[in-house]
Image (cartoon, rainbow, N blue to C red):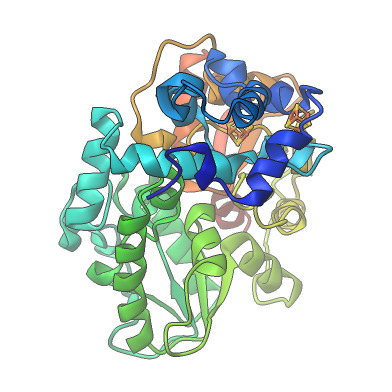
Length: 392
Ligand code: SF4
Ligand code: SF4
């Protein structure tokens, strides 16, 4: 169950600790370091390397070399991995050590509750299955039940887009755009479970496997061609980590990719040009994890908006702070939250009125951060689908 002592690291991880040049590039881009300075990926590597040479002589890895606060501070954004000149993968080592903490029950109460809810209800909100598709109520035509009829696109909605009340309107607009585009799509209603991406990043591998099994069982009985999701976290795990469910590995698209395809094929046509000056936040699990940078930008430009980039964009985008299960953990006293730093960056771009997001968690994080930084008069947060909806 994860890494308890140094001997349990893989040879590549041990080599990584040895290879660090101590340049500090990873520390400079780390949102956990920037917000609270609890975690420095550089310092972690330096400490782990020293520990390797002392061969755990008198010091325990957990508690002696690395602290639980450091391990839980990581958002798994991969900014450190992206920037490292020595090809070091910090994140897998941190997650492997988290697995040991989870095994020992060494985590905060909020995270414990979220994991218990995920185990019991299949979602982190602790709500019943029956409430998962409540957002579809009153939609005309009704959203198809993919368990009952074959569809081309299976929309994997995800927990946040299903249950979070801030997002209901966005989720309904997504359905509306899909319907107006004539897309043959359906959802799994109360049979969908959290896809497990962040459960895995937290280090709860057993629960991850249980969620994969439950979703795979349902998916194996449904007739569809392609999975589509608005959630980059679900996208990442469904695309890269789910096993063959008996029907072969399904194609998985993020809605930005699907919208891009439908716009270029003429399936989605716009009746107006919006003319906003906007900037776009690259979600970590869409950008750095899956290399999707151009599709959302093409969609934004197709709606007649002018896109101005933030200083940190594409591979260098700054994490909102919610990834890797951080959204389920208690917030400690911080200098500035990563989401607030990002809002400050967005308003620093000359003339930008709108921050476009393509992730349900980003939507909630940035809506909050706009308020806490007092920028409500200056900047509006919109989901990519809201631009498309408005331009149709
Ligand atoms: S960027 Fe890589 S080489 Fe530089 S300090 Fe960080 S881990 Fe070490
Ligand atoms: S993955 Fe992100 S939060 Fe974690 S250490 Fe690397 S830069 Fe910091």
